[in-house]
Image (tube, rainbow, N blue to C red; front, side, top):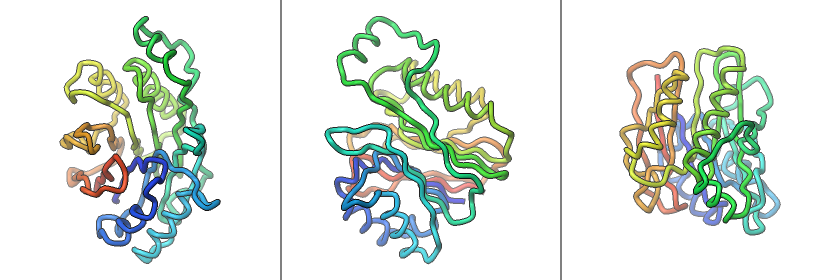
Length: 245
């Protein structure tokens, strides 16, 4: 199975994104595409437009779901999921990553979060009896805040019926050195939940040289898996891929 996650920067270069999908074979075998910062162009959700392009490029049929998290500079900012038809049996749902109960922040982090307009973050959950997928987009500001948002996804996982395979993919906004102690909390939480980061070997998923995006899996996976990025300039993020048995 091939998974891709991509923050498409509000679809500001949607034409280039569609061009990349048609021209690069990496997309032609995609089973699951997780999108962050999708929007609406010409009255049509970006996920619908991209699903159609994937179908044209690969010959497969795709379904899609898009949910708006907030308005950003007058544009809809949404998470979305696109999947090969028949993968899921339930309508995707939205998991809130805002207004987290019991959130405790240090004074400096509270000050930073108050200095910017409130951000509403969500994850999308899609599932069947065989697998469950979360598309996440964590906050830009705040170390502990991001960790609590990730823990909210893990908590939702633990409350759902067990499935053979779980995929958690998206933009963690983990700016800074990859070995930063505060990012280790996210890795530790993932490990405790049985999640393996398929993208751990990647060092850059953003044009600024940062590693912000990741794909985690838990459950029945083999040893034959790999992860890579595609060096294209259709967004400030690179599309991140993982193949797993």
